[in-house]
Length: 237
Image (cartoon, rainbow, N blue to C red):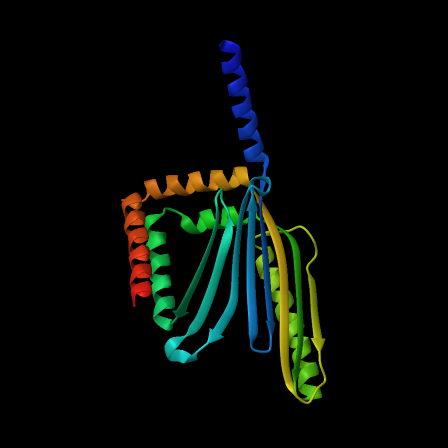
């Protein structure tokens, strides 16, 4: 009996070590050609046992009043296979509402900004490719804009590198197209990873920080209920 108990404990420890030593892999891709957009996010964990796939095949601006029209497709195995589709408009009021949620989260968590910076510092970016082809319809203007776009891209990469670890040199491309018509297309392909053990540790630290804040747990519960209530209202509308 003691032998079987010992074997069970050893197997449990081995599973725990495997879990903590595994990595969470994240892949993000964005493609915009003319008026067509597509954003895809894939998350893989536990050596492929857990997979989530998010796709935004439609992202359209419908004016300042209605805002962005977004269609989200979600699927994956975690651990049961599932799929879901959602469509909604993101207006200016929604953005203001999310900003208020962010302020409430800051009040409900002690040192949330510091926690975010510490967590992002453990995110390793293993691939970052960004290619842009464009034409302004004028050769001189296109050439000038190409130089400015190069500078903007490297400035953005420099800012991102302050928060995350770039494991490889990013590959950035700017291709001016000397055409009489206005054209624009861009493609981003990014991959990253973070230790599952650190992700669990970061979640534990977040819980501790929420407990250290004045009624932090209660504020988080109210915030989650408020977000869920707003989602139900939007779906019913």
